[in-house]
Image (tube, rainbow, N blue to C red; front, side, top):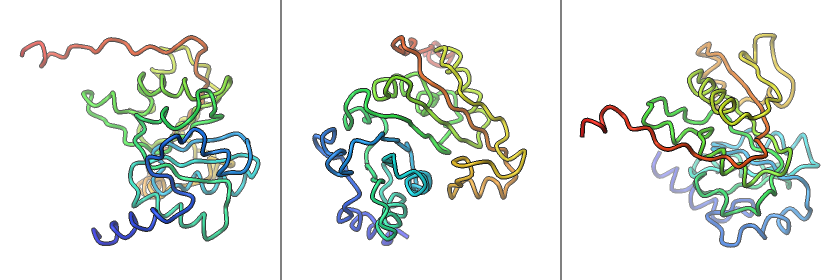
Length: 231
């Protein structure tokens, strides 16, 4: 497996649709795509199922899958090259650094599909809908931009609803069971690799989409835990 991963990391360095920690990336996207169509990001994209499938179905938008794990990204990038899907690209970087790679207010939508829920309370700051990440997204999104979350984790879903309420984010759609009425409409019918596993395990899939507020999002002071007080 390790050898396979190394081969994939080597391969994506030659893929024209993969950008690894690029310098001056803000100016690269329009020349790469050859147009100024709206850009949609898929954060923690894994194998890029949403980026690739939405790009195939929506040619009037450009899609960029973002992840740090190049061995997974290889799958989606290779598929896009093989099928000549030209309105999708992949960016290898950490989500915390995402504002380094795009002009302010240049992104139309952000999709977060089955991210690590970081269930331990001490890891809450790593959840991709935490205050600090919403503040980053606010810098990236155009006015009226949309954030989408699709997850099998009820704790993460509930946490996200708390963040939405805290920052008074207007909710567009909130679905507590995506598959309750059968197969959902596009694009929620797109399944990631992990979603397929979750469904086989009879887990409930949840979805929410929302706008961010006009007022700047601030990160509340860190709460002092009982353990830290004891120290």
